[in-house]
Image 1 (cartoon, rainbow, N blue to C red):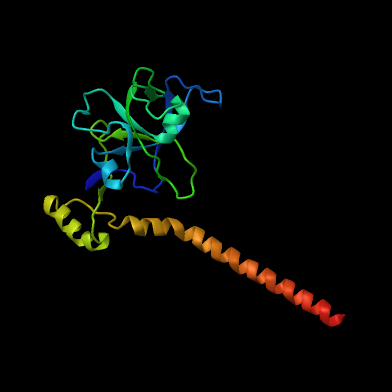
Image 2 (image 1 turned 90 degrees about the vertical axis):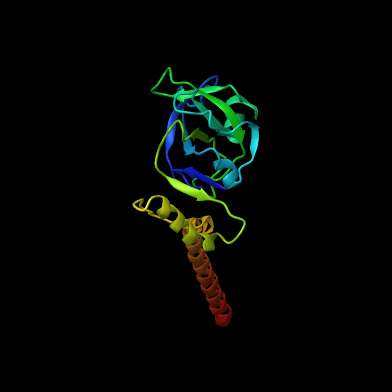
Length: 209
C-alpha cells in the first residue's frame, strides 16, 4: 500500500481552531483546538486504521466538491455522543460559512506521542488541501530492505525531488522512545544509589550498636 500525508504517525503536527456544529465546549468558547492530518485516499488502509463507520476519502472529494472530513472515534463520542456522525458539520473558527461535512469515522491512534490520552482527531483529503509531505509505504516483507528500491523509484519519476528523510516506522518509534528510556535509566540509577546509601546507613548503625 502507498499513501501520502504531511503528518506521520507518532509525529508532531498542526492543529486547527474548529467550531463543531451542535457541540458547546466546556471552556465557554465556541471552538475547540483539534489536531489534524491531511491524507490521501489510501492512507487509512496503508497505516492500518480500521473504518468504524461511513466512508473514507475517494476520487469524488475534489477541490471543487463538497468539503469533507473524517474523524476518529474519540471525536465522534465527545462531540456527538455516538460513533456514526455522518452528515455532521464543522468549520474553522475564522470562516463562518466554510462548513465541512463528516463522512466517516476511523479508529483511534497515537498521532503525537505514544503516551498521549485518547484525543479527538480530524482528517482532511489531500485533494481538497494540496500540500507537501511524506510518502507512506506498507509492505509484507522487511521494510528496511525496501528503502533503496523506494529511493530509486522516486528518483526515476522525479530526479530533482529532494528526499529529506527515508526510514521505517519502527526506527521513528524507537526515536520517540529514546528520551523516556534515558529518563527511566537515570531514575533507576538514582534509585539504586538511594538503596545503597540507605544500606550503608543501616550497616553503620548496626555496627555502632
